[in-house]
Image (cartoon, rainbow, N blue to C red; front, top):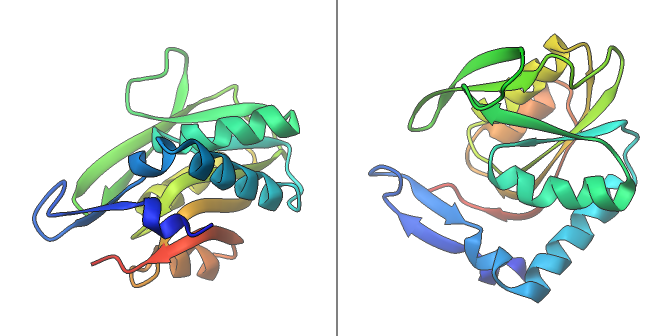
Length: 175
């Protein structure tokens, strides 16, 4: 299945100069959504990990199916002030601003291998922050899975240079 045809491209969103790759058109198509999840699960089955983590919010859509199908605990990596218990926090730069993500301090145990899933890798700021949260929590990053890699932006290369394994289903230019 050609997943690219299910991705909507929106110019100048969320700010001028950004070409936003929208997955809502993929997830509203039942067959494309099932195919995407099946492919992510297929990749996940080849990775040794203890828990699956997802980056808010679109990563939740795909990681929850991996958690369910492979019977792995699911860790939420959320925006600042969205988690009710004690958290670890990491600030980072986005292509269009600054942000913070957090994880509950009791979500990851020392030495646990954590697979991180998100919808898209662009500049790598969010993914790198997620990896830092896993490490701060005592865990190890087992790898990253993205639906989309924006191949002409530095995110995927950045993660690989830091020694992380990355996987993606489709690629688009970032601009």
